Length: 367
Image 1 (tube, rainbow, N blue to C red):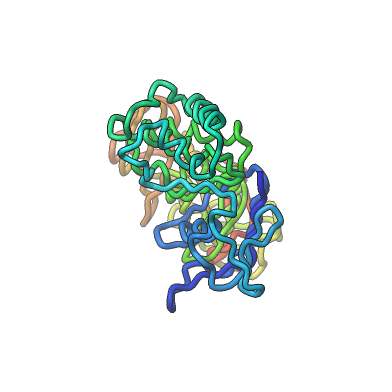
Image 2 (spheres, rainbow, N blue to C red):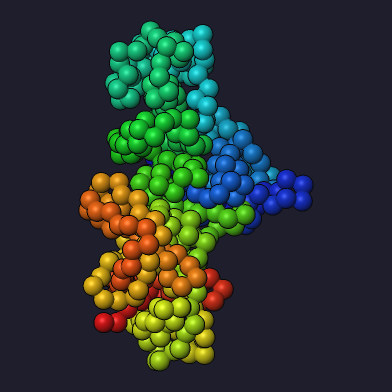
């Protein structure tokens, strides 16, 4: 296992800043997901850890050792960083069997033949591909090829496994299966995993911590449920969660340090906040997750704009004034488009943001 420390890492391509003064600590045995939209700097960050890209400024430490420092002129080669790198396209040798692909790196490291054989068989068993040692990559499914690529990467026992969207070429069912496998492998190997994805569901389900980037800037670095429940700003809130959070711009009247009246169209609610809010503020943004909007006998009137039942739950779009809200109703139920309903906000942990989108506090609706 190894700790990774990024200190004020900046990477520029000409005048374009891909990563902007990033500082994070990745602890031993963590499973970190680098998350964000295309072009946010997540793959560049991963490649800098691996040594495949050279930062413009900053410092990188692995297991307490400086592997890059712009100030000290240190840049340790990728081969000496003890990192395994799993690419998006698997990069398997097509003319080699599964056994040969897994053994290839070990042969280059001059391992004895008996140790290579034992390690390859161990990897075949770990990835549950024992029946395929003599097959060629073209004779395997996408999921099986992915397992071979992971086995080859894990074979030299790297203390760090770096993965760049490794599941993006798989269908939905295989992606789910491989997520389960990756989480099992992380537990069994004890290695430090750093995983690039633009899929927030992958980030939520796999990570011990999410590193969410936007335009090269760190937006939040925290455990998945912390990012989901108390996002640093409206960008984080909107990026994480499906269906997406409802962000309602409200006229506000501060009734006390921990009480605010919020109005938007026909919505008029009073919330109790968990922390004091600015007394002179006149506008807030209320963040409500879809699962916190319940159908009620009385409450805020809405109109059903769409109803998408999936058996276990139904995703609703509900019209309220000049906008629509996302709601999730659990159970096997459907609604008619145009149907009139009432809703209530059920959680005491709604999010309250300032006018500029910064997180202020959690809150709950009175009554």
